[in-house]
Length: 438
Picture (cartoon, rainbow, N blue to C red):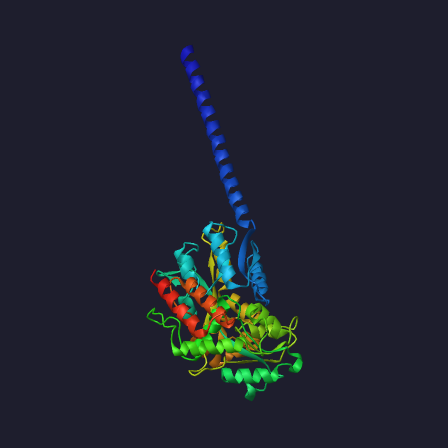
């Protein structure tokens, strides 16, 4: 009897101890779950910094977009990293960083000719799953601009704005009936207006050896009916039309109406010369209207006119340009990067960029937005819109950068009179054919 009581007591004690341990364990697990929940909540509220990279912005567009985004997303801070204004240097900087799998930048701008290259190199994240999960309607975008960011059936970037070359002029110096219709008219009128109204030059354009020169060359060549590479991917640069267009470009670049160092001018120098009142005429992209009417920096506010670029034998031609934005594959914050990209390339971001940056939207409905049209009256002009849709594309090639380098080098040599236009064209023909064999 006494022995049974002893085991009974021991069993009772064991049971009690087990219940106590279970209770403690339950309490600890509950506490851990609570701690995990609190930790997760704290992580959700933690402020994340992402880095957005693009070339120098001479407008207030980028600043306004970042401010609006951060106001709507207080847990995401956007740090702006300014890249070289020269698109070629910008391209090479990105390639160096991304080839090294750098996570230094999260979102970055790409020239309209880069997305396919960067996608093939595995530098950018495909956006399809983000687009699908957030129900983004890609049908609202300009389809030409959208197609430039597609490769192998996937969407690698979103188009921010579309570009086309335009002629700007000082309305206090040039009346509407004086606006040049042809390149010969431009040379004549620029010579007449040079020196008037405090100007130093008659005409300014981008003639430095970089991508901007390719765009200008395409405009001259196409206005005379020429091409570098046709739709069948055939090299057709060696033609009378192309030669005539390039000869006109060389004539303008060596004329007395342009700066003596015009071969150092990119968009930045061109914009500066125009807003400081140094030139009567300017070739630049749509953003120039906002820049030239910025009261904080421009001396020609309210004196800015816009027209199609001068025509050659076959009419006026404008190079199709524009910029896209994508996400670095190696970003440590892809979710936050997508939120910023979606905002920046979406209706609100593009509206701010149109108003403060002067960039032509890729979301077509914004061309009828009263605020956008008020800030950029030209955007409401049907002729301007038609011009964007009918702009001349740059040569389409898988290795476009190599083709661009060939054009840059040979056209620069022709401008510098180191070789004739005929010789430059022959050189381009041979080099392009060799590159397209690869």
